Image (cartoon, rainbow, N blue to C red; front, side):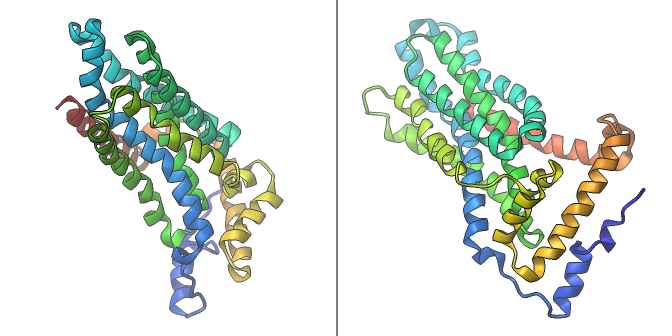
Length: 299
């Protein structure tokens, strides 16, 4: 069965026609609930940027404290790259965690990894404990990089979805910029690199606490047959006139996903030209972003 999304109620085409007819006049950027949800989820992106950028300044002082690191380039490279290895593992498992346990629990897990890794690095008595902390932080980065944009996208109204999802990228670059300010601020403070690496636990704890008060993604709830909870979340985002349409759209999308899962596989990404091109375009951009981040760290 093939579903034509363009003819669905709530589709982009349908909404454009409705807007032209003057039947909808909703400014979602004024919805504090949507903006708050986006801001809290975006903290994961901030931690992504901070933990990948802060090591560039901290490593200078780590080498001074641990002679074994100063005289061993391989150890220095391992300290820097271990977070990226953790990010690979976290991203690889993050998709499964999101599907199995939801976006909210995935975010909470990422926060635990961020906080644990930051505290381990802050208290590290040697380079190998520091490497372990970087691995934990990397796992948090990987999970957050998968979870935050999905959570925002599934809760955001389609009219402003692109703008809200891009907030996550803004937070990543903002986190990198803030990490350099923190490096500068703690340059003359006793403990230097321990403060630089340990301070990341603060936003992780803040996000963990705030996420406890936020709902699960309505799309994930609907897929798990928790329709009442999904509708309760949608009621916080849409008015009564729009709510029925969004629920119907969610039901149709869930049915389409269920049918696709029965016949599809991950190999379809490479078999179908459209999906293959989109996959390589997205993955290529991510590689370029990571490479640019690494070049800044190395310099």
